[in-house]
Length: 177
Image 1 (tube, helix red, strand yellow):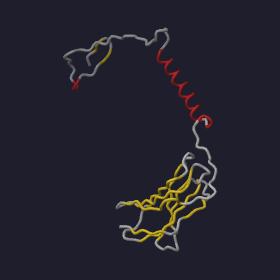
Image 2 (cartoon, rainbow, N blue to C red; image 1 turned 180 degrees about the vertical axis):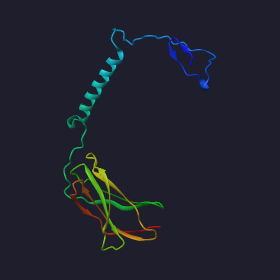
Image 3 (spheres, rainbow, N blue to C red; image 1 turned 120 degrees about the vertical axis):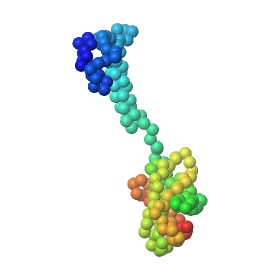
Image 4 (cartoon, rainbow, N blue to C red; image 1 turned 135 degrees about the vertical axis):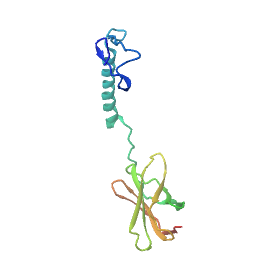
């Protein structure tokens, strides 16, 4: 192998002759900032400190935004719907009620089945209550429905703990395509 400045270099294609020999000249350089210190080390320390401080601030519950618990409504009632939104593949049941209050995390719940007296299947969808609104719109998606089948359903809502909001619609029905 040819040698240049004490280093060996393999030649392209395994040939022992080089059209241009390489000469390696060692160059020493040091990255410094204007104050004369090593800029990379200082930057890494600052970055690490910012990450630590940021993670402490954003993970502290007292400093993060939380939804307040609102006063429970004396009586929750459906003010609009339930209505069906559908296309060829999905059925969504939508209804509006006065704001049930309580914990901010709720679930819209649909009990359904093919027999109006046996609504044993459940579909539910999470929702976060807005304490500034006097009403809440629930939308629950129903999957894996059989084609050309009549389904019966009722709607209601629960808090994230499972506590029922105390309302349920009358039994309604729809038929899939």
